[in-house]
Structures are given as C-alpha cells and as structure tokens.
Amino acid sequence: MRDRATDSPAGKETRREADRLLAATARTVWAPLLVTGLAVALSTAAALALPAALAGAVDGVISGEGARAAWLLALVLAAAVCGDVVSGLAGAASTASATASLRLRLTSHLLRLDAVRARRFPAGELANRLVGNTATAGRVPLTVLHAAAELVSTSGGIVLLLVTDWRSGLAFLAGVPVALVIVRLFVTQLSGVYEHYQGAQGRLAARLTDTLAGIRTVRASGTEEREIARVLGPLSDLSRAGHDMWRAQARGVWRISLLLPIIEVVVLVVAGLGVTDGRLHPGELLAVAGYAAMGVGFVEQVDALLGVAEARAAARRLQEVLALPPLVPGTRSLPYGPGLLQLRGVTVTREGSRLLDAVDLDLAPGALTALVGPSGAGKSTLALLAGRLLDPESGRVLLDGHDLAELSPQALSGAVAYAFERPVLLGGDLASAIAYGRPGLGRDQVRAAAWAAHVDDVVRRLPQGYETPAATAPLSGGEFQRLGLARAMVRRARLTVLDDATSSLDTATEAQVTRALVEGMRGTTRLVVAHRAATAARADHVVWLDGGRIRGQGRHETLWRHPAYRALFAAAPHPAGEA
Image (cartoon, rainbow, N blue to C red):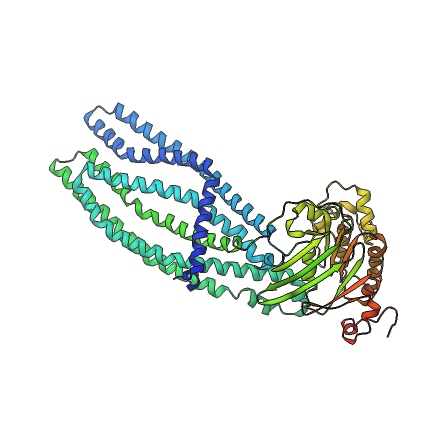
C-alpha cells in the first residue's frame, strides 16, 4: 500500500535522497559501529561453532573422553557472551550517536532556513520529526549490521548443515523458497503502511501543539469539545494504518509460525533416521538440530527488514525538511557605515502570490522610517528582508552599499537588530535574554536598554529581578514585548527593525517607547512597522505599501491628505488633529 505521491519522479528522488541520508548517518558513527561489527563477528563465529562443540562434548561424554571437548565448549560459550556484551554496549553508543547526528543536522538546517520556509511545517510536525523520526532512522546502522551478521549466521548454518548431513540439508532447502515468498509479501505489504502511520502521527502532534499554544482562546470560546474533535481528527487515519499493519502482521506471522516448525521437524526426522541407520552419531544429531535452528534464522530477518522499512519512511520525512533550500551564508565582513538600506527591484513570491513586486526603496541613514499599509501589503516581508531573514526571488537588498547575501552571518547580526510582535526570550534569566547574542554585555548596559524600553521597573519588582528565569517570568504580553525591544536596543546596531513590536503596548507606553526610538536611538537607522498614526507621525519618513508595491512615501502630514491613507488609521484619531 504505497502513496501515489511516492511513485512520482519527485517521490522517487526523495526516496533516493533519504537512502543517501541513512548511508551518510552510518558513516558518521563508523568507530562505534566498527567495534560493534567486530563483537558481532565474534558472536556469530561462536554461534556457528557452538553446535559442533556441543556435538563433540556429547560424543566425548559417551566415549568417556569429554574433558577436552568440554573445555572447547566452555571457550565457545565465553566468546559468545563476550561478543554479546560488547556488541550491546557499542551498539547502543552507535545508535545514540547516529540519532544525535540526525537531530543536529535537522536542527542546523532548520536554523539556516529563511523565515518563511521555517514555517513550512507546523511546530508539532517538526517536533515529531526531530524527536521520533530521528530516533527511528538512527537505529538503521545497527539494524543493518545485525541483519548482515544474521545473514552470515544463517548461510553458515545451512552450509554446515549440508556438510554434517547432506540429506538433512536438502530437506531443509526444500522449504526455503516457500518461506522466502511469505517473507517478501509480508515486508512489501508493511513498507507503505509505515509511512502513512508516521504521517498521521505527525499531523496529530501538529494539531495538539497548535491547540496548546492557543489554549486560552479555546477555553474562553467554550470550544473544548470541537477542538478535541479537531485534534483527534487524524486518529481515523492512524487507526486505519494501524489496522492495516496488524492485518498484514497477522497474515504473515501465522504462515511463518506454521511453516518453520514443519521445516525443522522434517530435518530432525531425516537426521533421526540417519542415527537409526548408523549414518550419524548422537552428537551429530544435536549439531543438525542446531544448524537447522540457525538456518531458519533468515525468517528473523523480517524484523530487521521491517525496521529498515520503517526507518526509510522516517528518513523520507526528515528529507522533506532537509530538501528545503537554506539561506547560503556570505563570507564578507561589513565595513563601518551610517546604515543606508536600499532595495533594488526586489520581488518576493510565495505559493504563487507576490508579496513584494519590484520594490525600489532607500531608507535614509540615521532616520526613523515607518512602514504602513493594510494587512497583506508586504510590510513584514520587507522587514524580514532588511536583515536577510528572507531572500528575494529577484532583486538586491543592500546595507551601506553591500549586498546582504554576500555578508557573513556575524557581520549581519552585528549590523541589524530585530524586535518582533511575539518575542521569544532565550538565554536563561531575563538579563541573559536581553543580552542574548551579546554575552559580553555588562549589567549596566542591560539595565539601560530595559529602562529605554520602559521595562526596567517591571523587572526590578520581580522577587528575583533580572535573575528571574525567562521561561517562567510572570509578565504580560506587553511586558514581554518591551523586553524584546530592550534586546534590540541594547545591540546598538546601525539598523534596527521593529516588526509590529509595539502592537501589545497601550497608547501611553507606546508613546514612551516611540520617544526612546526617536531620541534614544538617534543616529541609527530604524525601520518600524507601524499601525498607529502617532507612531507614523513621529517618524522622519513614512513608506506606504499596498499590494506588495509602494503606493506612496513622504512625511506623515503629507500622506494624511489621502483618504485611503487616513483609512489605515481609522480606529485611531490623528495625533495632531490635521484634516
């Protein structure tokens, strides 16, 4: 049962890339895998020698000369135990290292994506792939190694069975083709089911994450039952895939469980007749039984094959994320400059819609520029371009005459600071959250930035002050937003971008913060996505976006003469009362 999408040329290419990903992962853990391989080889050799050693010990006991054979048997058993212990420890290390390698690769890739592609998959879906699918794929190197060892053991068992008694060997081989057909059908049926099952798990995780993020809205709206039904919607797909898996397992397992004992019984009957005829010694009968048991071990490859099938499905889900093109970092440094931001013929398209269309724009260095426009006009997209959190499909974005695409990440982070509508505070405590990315900043600088953002008094009132853990700080949305502003202000970058970073502030606090942007950051270039007329009125320059194009620009008082411009701020009175 395979999804049609996986049979398309793109789906086949994804499968090939996923297999290359698994191979590359195996190469990263070659050292513990090598130790595991040597230990498994020792265990396999001991397993192949065990039936013969046991036969020799039995025949020695019967003949009264069993001391040497007993010591040999003890040596073989000790080798098997040592091999199992070492392979268990080294195997666990290789699996852990492979999983960690995949998680590091996936996380690093996600952090290199632009701001739009990073949201291609819901957070819950990404968490499922980062935690569950990496663990599944990380087991592949060890699974393949054990499968190879089992194949050697099985092949060796069959060869030694033929050497010990060719009649018993032929009786065994007669049942092998039937068993192989059953195994192949079993694996084929289950391979496609795994991908559907993992996909349903991912959708369920994504919906649950979204619901938890908006739990207050759900409770306030009284829509708990409806939300539960929405979150559990993928359960039907999960149940269908699970039942398909169980049905396939049931069909395969009972057939294999019936066939294998029949093969072993037939082999033992032939060998028993050999003992009766005097063709075989009693010890050789035990050897035949042992080699027959090893020979049917090829059926145990079903678990390994299913594990590989499940891992390949997981790797395809990882590859879907890794296939998203990342931002290619530049290498050039950025010489000192006043903070002149220029856009030249910039076009940004996503999912067939033009977010920005051939935009040309100059932001005067040292000035405060307000970016206004209706929802969907392209304001946030332009703001993301300013610090290369997004690359345009065409056109160039320049800072002091240097293309952002050519600058190193260190140069960019030092030159451009951001504050967002919903800041995520990283770094530990509140002081570290404000200084995030600038660990060398002193406490005085952190407090000065917090004071400028009008949040210093809020932090000081907390029992632990600036040492309050950011993750558990009892702050409102507006207070968190001011902390985000402080984080941008403390960097003293030549260009500061505020993307809707004052939307949660009350009018009085926004006026205070805007004064800090106007006066406290004078001399640096500031780009503010503005929704209030008061903010636009204090700006040195206003850029009016509409439909991805610049509809107008100039002073707020000049643009205010346009009815469509005034309509942008219809909910708020004009601060100076101009008509």
